[in-house]
Structure formats: C-alpha cells, structure tokens
Length: 408
Length: 80
Ligand code: SF4
Ligand code: SF4
Image 1: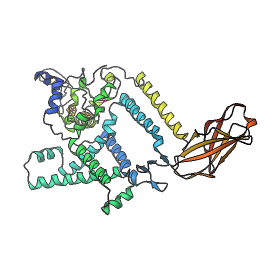
Image 2: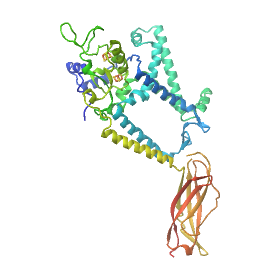
Image 3: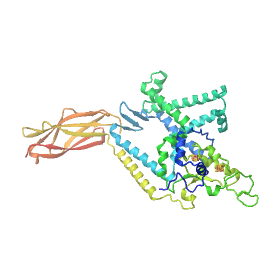
Image 4: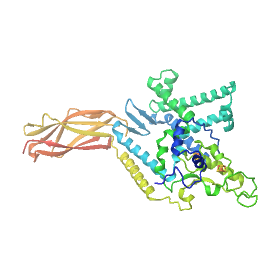
C-alpha cells in the first residue's frame, strides 16, 4: 500500500529541513508529543468552499439545537427516554428489544465512512465532524471579540492589561455560555427540553442532569476552544487510519507542485515563467504563505499530503483569491487525485468503490426492509412442564402458558 | 411501531375443532409491557393421530389486523 503520508511526489521544504536538522518523522512526532504546542491562529477565509462549510455547519447545528424543540405526535420528536427504556424517533418508538437496529446503524456509519473516504477523502473531517463544526463556531466568536489573526497574535503576545483582560473575559464568557447551551441541548435529548427548562429556571435539575450538562458543556468548551486541531492530530483515531482507505483515485486537497514551483515573490506584471538574464523563471506560487495562515491545523499544504490535513479546503479558497489577483488561473491548490497530479486518468468507479457501494446499499436495503416489516409485538409459547395433558371424558386437555409481550 | 395499548385475540390451529380456553378475555396489553397468559387447549382424542401434533398460535390485534404474529408449538397427548 502506498503511504500517502509521506508523499513522494511532492518536493517538500519541510522534508528538506527535516533531513538538514537530522530529524526523522518519528522524532518529529515524538517531539510534537512533548514539545510545547504552537498555537495556531487560522486566518479567516472566504470563498466557495468556505461558503459550503458554513452551510453544512448551519444545517448540522440547526438539527442538533433544533430537534429537541420540534414536537411530534404530542411529544418531543427525538427523545431517548432512558428510565422508561423507550426511544422515540419521530413516528417510531424503539424498545430495548430493537437493539438490532442500533447495530445496523453502527454498521452503516462505519461502512459509510469507508465508502466516502475512499471516494472523497476526508470530507467528513472538513465539513461535518462535530470537532470541526464546533471549532468553527468558537473561532467565529473569537474572531468577533479579538479581531483578525494579526490582532489575535498581538493580543496574546501583549502584557496583561485591563483591556486584554476584558477582551479575554468576554470571549470566554461567550464560549462558556455557548458551551453550556450545548450541554443543555445534549441533555434535552434525554429529558424533554421543556421540562428541562422548567427545572432549570426553578433550580430543580437532578444531579445527573446537572452532571451531564456541565460535563458536555465543559467538553465542548475544552475541545472547541482550547484543544482544536490537537484533537484531530493526536486524539482522533479516524484521522490516523484514514490513509489506509486512500488510494490514488481518492479526492484530496493538493498543491500543484509542477505548476507552483519554484515559488517566490515577484512583481505583479512580470512574466514570471520566462527564464534568462535578469529573469526569475518562477512558478505560479508567489510564496505569500496565505495557505499556511488559513490552515486550521497549521500545516503547509505545499509540503504534500500530510496526515494533519483535514481537507477543509480553506487553503484552496485563499489561494484561488491570490491566483485571481495575480491574473493566473485558479486551482494551484485544488481538489484533485494522486493520479491526476501525475498526469494519469482518475478512475472514480473502481473495485474498491463498487464493493463498498454494494455492501452499503445492501445494508441500507435490509435496514429499511426490516424496519418496514417490524411487528411491534412478540409471542412466546412455553409449555407447562408439570402436566403434559389431562384426559377429561374423552377430551385431551393440554396446559400451556403463552407469554406474549408487545413493544410499541 | 406505536406506543399504544392493544387488544388481542389469540387462536390456536392445527387440530380439527381445537378449542383454546383462557380465563382472561379480551387480552389487553399495555405498550411496552409483557404479560403471562395461561391458556388451555382442548382437543378430541379421536382427532389426534400422533402423540405430538404441530399446532400454531396466532395473535392478532383486534384494532389492527396487520399487527399479527404466529408461533409454532406442539400438542402432546397420549399415544393413540
Ligand atoms: S496561497 Fe497559493 S500562492 Fe500563496 S503561498 Fe500558498 S500556494 Fe503559494
Ligand atoms: S492543508 Fe488546506 S485543506 Fe488541509 S487542513 Fe490545512 S487548510 Fe485545510
């Protein structure tokens, strides 16, 4: 299996530096585990993919925060009533006996991940993962309070003044408020939202409800406010084993090294490609480092595909702007495949995709079919062990117990 | 798939003129509840050809014909 983490085709500054300083990749990882974390200040980015990301975030967060307020058949649309062991999902009621469906659902999720990763790389990471989505909200709040990337960096470097304290306190207050609301929403999937509000305003929250609101809120605050990319890089198992699902036809975010190198600054009007006396002979990359500045994981995509890259495509958007300003065609950084970069044909339909696709469709069909055939009752027949039969005037009487249960 | 109280009818088939007797009619089961329902089956000896006869219990909700389940069982009697 080709190892995509150390992309062989990319000429990589980072690698050269690594070799220079005599560090291997493992050493680097080791250092990064013990070394002090460099805080990443992602620069704000606009563009088509940023727009799609915001759209996805609004949709997903809208579902998460909105569902507990949606009523259905006179009760909350999605409610996991643990004490009563009933799980309401819109018109359906599930009982513990329906555990099988949960297994199905987990299988579906796993297979879906395989399928979409093989097809489109880490789209999940970049657009839909809660870690990414909540981090984006927290960054947005930070941006509102602290200002641009440069302002944030200056603020962090400056001495603690009353002004700095005020700004930081405001930010954390907003973060905590939002995180607490997140914790509240989480718990309202288990205790109906309306009851929970009542309990909250009357200070009657139960100990477990309080615990989970605080715990979930704290986890949100910590992960999205403080940990951020560290979760993706060091904690998320999916981020680590993704490269096993990649192949040369998988959609990746990549810098077109053939087009971009040699990089370097230039005068806007210069015919940068021409070589010769006094000519620069440059590629399309102007080395503005904007792609590095926008990256939420703080990497340089020009070093090739790296495991830290969550395929958020922020670098695509920002570089496209740069290309526009320079009058070069867009797409120096773009969604592409390993094959396309090497000038080969990209094959979307390939055995891996077909196999994943068939299994996925199969499981979805079985799932829907069994759900539609679900009979919400059960019947067990248990014979009386003491007495097989009794003869009463020519009639055979038989003693039976039928145990029947209904679930929903 | 719902969350309602249902009323059921229990039948047994497999032997001619098989009679099902129970002390509890109609059979009402609350949503999510399990009940034990003792029943007796009564058959005429002349209709029994084997010691063990296959029979089928059918449970049908009276208010919802689609809500129906069957369960196989054996009727054990004396050697004919
Ligand atoms: S944003 Fe584009 S032009 Fe600027 S450094 Fe990155 S790749 Fe080069
Ligand atoms: S390299 Fe580009 S796509 Fe990857 S995480 Fe950084 S900004 Fe996002």
